[in-house]
Image (cartoon, rainbow, N blue to C red; front, side):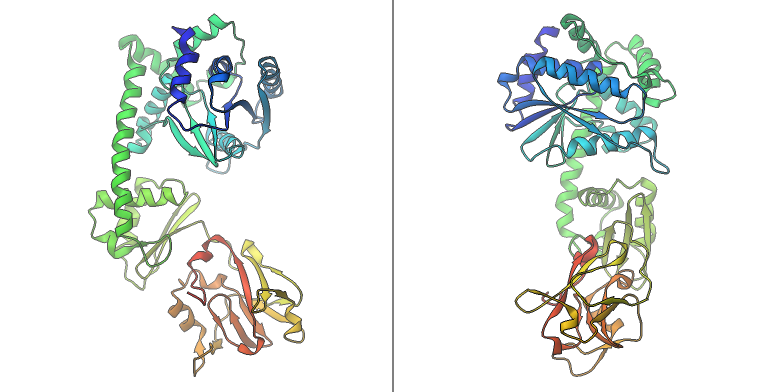
Length: 447
């Protein structure tokens, strides 16, 4: 019975750890209207404070009216309200739906503290639609798993407590409670794949198979269970194929795996590092082009937001590298030096860790350059000068990272290869690099 929805929600949420705040992702549509109303009826039985957040994408002329409806409803229910405005413009090659979704979850995730939950109103029919879309896209098990009941988001967790309810149940509840909601015209636009499935495909399936939405959602659950087993196997295998550098994988370790397990490990590794999933085509290229390459080769493949590169036996996954800095030296006399292309900044510190001005060590200060060749360095305790290329090789710095390593010069002499070697001990101090994210792969002097 629709009247029992609030009690059932309490039972669903009781399965999760106690939350400090329960945020409802409140669009103002029927589904989130039902979720907010039902939770407000049992707020005294929730583990944390009930709040609502509305995301204004700014994509429709009526969006201010929808935001005002949400604000007024929350005021009437006595629920604290937060309005988030986002820029949902699509990037090149990105669909408008995907851009809006990424902007929405980015804004909502930013609200969450470690003990917070974000409650969204997706239901059983939404789950069936998601599965059908995944099938039509040729997705693997992860895609066919559709939407999980709980997932990490920001510092907290996203929870979908209505996945066990049909759209009809929610509509019955809304009618019985006399709820009013906003209608987004995009939901009826058959130019969107999901709208076409919702209004044309799924009703036809339900006409022939009345329980179609429930059975499709159940199939998504079976896929999620199978994917969980694969993820567990991939996680166990990851430890056995770890590379020499933090976050890398061993090429030799991957090559002894059968192709199916190797693809599963690569998918899990890429996901754990926070990158978008690689397509089956990209994974195939990693297996056929990158792993079999000669140890001195440097093959790589890329997709949106990620590059897979190899150096020696290590396989790296990293964000696309910025443009290479040019070789023009940058003067460095006072304070911290901000490096170009978001590469971080340099400070000069004494043995006690105190910041000092470079020109107190060398008249006129130093210069910082990138990508120079033909330089030599004699690190402490080494009798002879070493070529810069040899220092990089000994430190295991991949050739594709070397142009981004700051070189500190006093006049024409190399004083430091930052975080690789000190070439002049006369200073009694050293530059410190607050690195870009990939800097974790650079071997520090103390390593």
